[in-house]
Image (cartoon, rainbow, N blue to C red; front, side, top):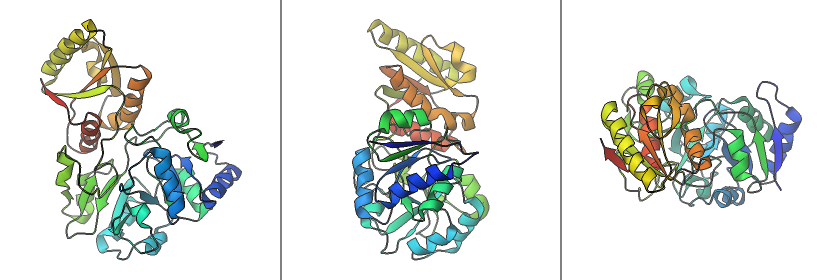
Amino acid sequence: MTFISKIDENHIDKEEIKRQAEILKEGKTVIFPTETVYGLGANALDEKAVSKIYEAKGRPSDNPLIVHIYDKKQVNDLAEEINENAKIIMNRFWPGPITIILKKKDIVPMRTSGGLNTVAIRMPSNPIAKALLEAVELPIAAPSANISGRPSPTRGKHVYEEMNNRVDGIILGGDCTFGLESTVLDLTGDIPTILRPGSITKEDLEDVIGKVNVDPALEKKEDNIRAKAPGMKYKHYSPNADVYIVSGNIENVVKKINKLSNEHTKEGLRCAVMCLEENKNKYKCDTIVLGRNLKEIASNLFDALITADEEKYDIVYTEEFSNSGVGSAIMNRLLKSAGYKIIKA
């Protein structure tokens, strides 16, 4: 049975936090909100506890986990080398939605690192996450709190519906701010490399540390032989519906989607399109409005994919969005969700 706590991030109930922290100390699993998505946490230094994360998610065991901390000093316990770029990133962006990858110390089990000699570390800014991490006084491994391959949850309601009775504790703490998982930055090579784009963009990073590469694997359909960061190796963020990205200028995109959805409706299939608010009245099928700009799209994307399941759509089309700034993170998630299925309009 799952122990449920409802906590307001503006008025944190320390007793409820303490109860959930005790569950983690006992080597069990607790779901908690962060500023990006809800995370499914367990003691990062306890292999048996980490195994329970994989079991709850149905997650492949060679996919690395992100370790969450509440104090920058904890990095010294987890990582061998904290280079100058790491220090700059930590000072500029922590607490916040960015994960850094460093060479790990032996204290971090291979089960946590996905068999790699590196560790992914993040310091969340969500007040509930910070309070929980401080109360437990342990680094907590926490991937997104969903069945592996499914859309990441950003609403407490969705966490409860999907994960109740799969974990030992759940903290319901409202909606997540950013809506996309953290940027993952590998700092173990000569040039910092983005392994997963997020709300902190390539441009943001280059402003403070200079040249930053983007891992070429992000542009490819094929899975990596060994995933260096969460979300790189396996199909992710997928609703039950077939998702297709429709590429081209908006007039052609609208015509293409209307033609295809009309054909599918005649076949008895339910269709919808994920789109900008300004385009919602152009479509002849159901619409799932993502927002007015890239920031809103990022915040609403996973919620929209879960809505597609709730409405039992068979096919979901989506407009293509700008690949600049946070748009690169949005398109990364959409490509994964669609299994790289793109229709040219």
